[in-house]
View 1: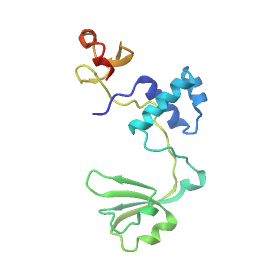
View 2: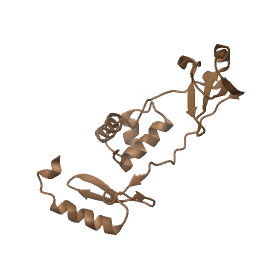
View 3: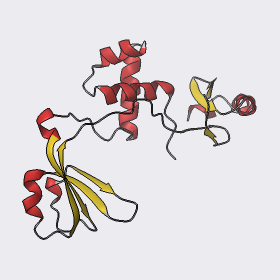
Length: 178
């Protein structure tokens, strides 16, 4: 089961979506935290596998592309695919550079559309679904933060907050360090 991202980790991811080359010092300043705290949060996100890759976007690479719709990817060389989408009907849409279209002679193509440009917009407001650390229910509103022995937990309601605090009091000190 994947752990919930802390509010700090979510804010850090939003900054990285805006500028993946931002320095740790700038991230810390923007978030109002120390450089060390920012570094630890970033290391935690990376080691958990939540960040797949850091990437850049080059202006010249954003034009003269084709959208190719196909039922299978068998005869489409992987090294020419810029993006691949698996569609709900089991087919695929791949994005290629226009000049690579000639390499699809043997591919089973349903439809091709030519794009003259591509613009990406990052949805900076998307926050992952957070689940209650006590009952497991998805938290729809603002989560309630509960600090127990130096760890932050998120709960959905005052009842879960009360019960989690009770549970935290019952855990022996040495068991809570695992």
